[in-house]
Image 1: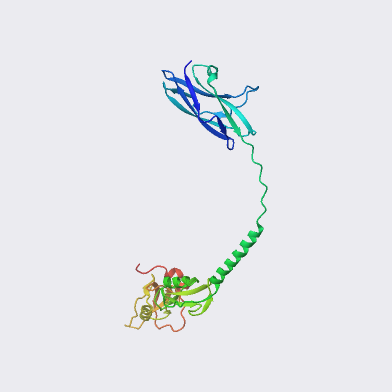
Image 2: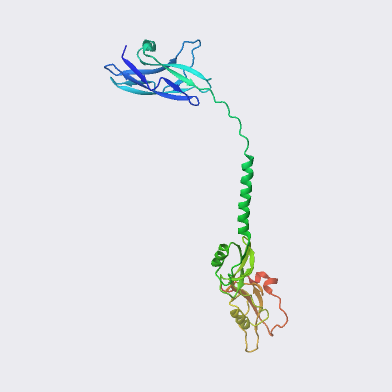
Length: 311
């Protein structure tokens, strides 16, 4: 029988939540390497045998001559009642029976403490809840009073939109913004509600109107000479072009005066368009200038006014 010795880090293990561990130092005293097994066995002889509650990772190891190996021994008594449970640890040669090393066994006592009795429930701290609620209401009330008390509305007319929004929000107001056509500088505030200098509740909304360039309106040139139509379009900053099917591009004076008259406009007269937008007109030569209101052929027959004469 080979010389195998073992020492334990502790003879007793007090388990916490049913779990614990110790370290077993196993030494091979033989002059040659030895395959050594660390096994766990019931500490008492019972029928049936009692549980060991033990697991040993990698229990079989080859230990060099004179060397020592550290084994971690884990215990798990989950579900066991309170008390002491003896477990026998034996380090033995894999070529021999563990009984041959019984005189070298170490008995470890696993101590399972009794579960703590549940503590009686504590009464609910209603008094502190009430005090905390009163304090909280007072704080909230003070904050709301400061936030929503009336304040003077800053005057932001003529200021750029971004600057106006910052001024109003810094003063504690919300901002609603809309656009309006105006001759004022594009992007500046032309109107605000409430006006600057008036009072309003903090957190209320101040509405501002921001200038955008005014869009021209298609002039009423139906029944007018093309020369007059061009002048009107130029004044409105709108481009004029002819539709396919237009029968004239200027008034004739010889041999007979036959004015070139606008009979159709697309988009229709009175429509707002962008500056330099392209508006198509359809023309016909007439013997006299039309004085009565002339129907817009581009509305009665839209297919006549879809394509430009020279796209």
